[in-house]
Length: 116
Image 1 (cartoon, helix red, strand yellow):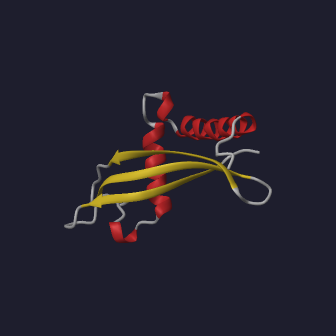
Image 2 (cartoon, rainbow, N blue to C red; image 1 turned 30 degrees about the vertical axis):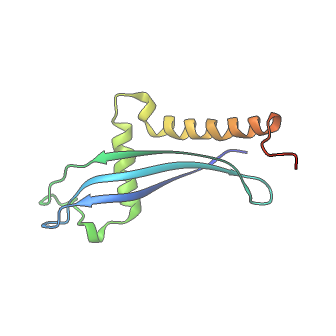
Image 3 (tube, rainbow, N blue to C red; image 1 turned 90 degrees about the vertical axis):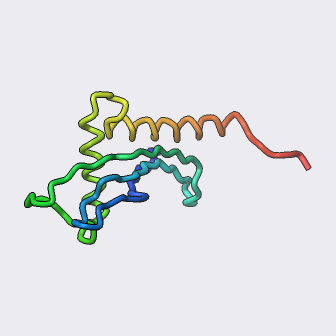
């Protein structure tokens, strides 16, 4: 079973004068569940994307008109533009899937708790 990967936006900073976004805080998480729907592994990474914008551009979207999918698109594009291959979207998602798989394997040989 593979981890379900989800990207989300946790917070944004914007300019009040024109509604332009200047900073985005994002999170990417991987979750695996068992056949009963219980979470059996979880891993996540967070980051910050500093934005530049041109309020006069035809592609400009004011803060109040943004959808989370728009901003996730910006974040993923920014990640893929990084020179560090470890920060590219595929690498982040693979790392999270690998962490989830490792947690499941570790759970097969280790347990926590107390005997009483």
